Amino acid sequence: MTRLAALSIACATCASACAIASCGTDDSPAPGMHVSVFKLVPDQGCSAQLASDPLTIPKELLLTVKPCDRGADTQLVAGVDQITLVVDYGALEFAESTELTSPTVTTLCDGVPVTTTVAPVPGHDHARAFFEVTFTAPARPATRLSIVVQAATGFSRSVPGSYALVAPEPAIAIDECAGAAPCTLVAAVGTIAVHVSVGGATPQMVTLASIVDDISQPGAIAVDVTTPGPGNRVEGVAFPPVPQGSRWSLRATLGGSSVPGPLIALTAPVISAALACAPTCVAGTQTALVITAPRHIHPATGSAKVVVGGIPLISDGAVPLTVENVAANTISGTLVLTFPATPGKSVVIDSLVAGYPATTISTTLQ
Image (cartoon, rainbow, N blue to C red):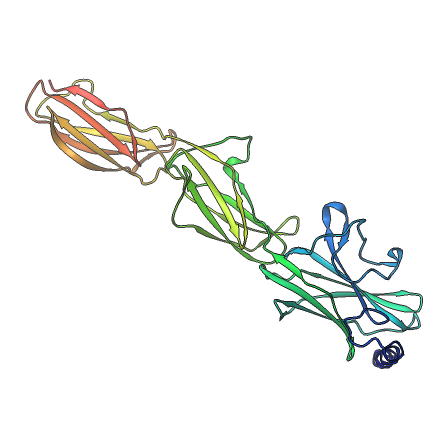
């Protein structure tokens, strides 16, 4: 029998069955189509039934779905959860050799049709025909999903109720914090690699916010989470600079889901300052003040305040750090000073890099 002939018989038989049973609208599941909805629960290795028509096909005859012992709530993770419909054509009977046209599944989010790729698998319970239709929950968080299944004109079923679609929960992994807690980094030095992942295959845009010393910082980072990863996830990576402060955390947000990363303890970078003329600096001569900080500190600019005999010689001298020492993992800069020709005067020098001070230099001009 051809698909077209089978479909015509299906329509005619359905019409007859409804006329005999006075089944009226297709909101009544018997004796017409039954649609049972299941959500895969990967960690249990089975699928939990959602609020829908009771399963009318014996479990042992199902081909792709293994029902759990318990049902599930009506919440689905958008773009992640795998849904399987068991579509029973009900009172319609066919020879097992009959090739039936697959049902059409229409998914609607807040009443708006959404294109969904489905994979129908046909089955038979003796003379009764059924299909198992698997698809992924539409990537439309903060909407409600409703489902309509149609086998032919006049033979369809609207699944009772609807299902809440929630945003998938992002996850954060930080390369520099891969070891045992607590995670400790040097403040204002370098960047970190933050890997953000989301369940499912749908590309996502995740917002990465920075919280320093319990204060949310401006300038959240938008992370494109598009690279397929293991475990049916997509991934993205961002490289935020390590801030100044003592405590730092990151928070990933996608839709209504927000997840914090690990708490990072920040330690002060080691800043040093030295006079080239030390330990004896002579009045009326020039010398160099050398300020040194860790490589990759930001901003890589120091400042110096020089007071001679209680009078400011330099109030806020900028010291660009440009000379790298790879072996020592440091960077330094130099400020040329000319001391007044007044022996016996005290010299006090305070230096800063990225807000962190070096030990104060105190000496007396000879």
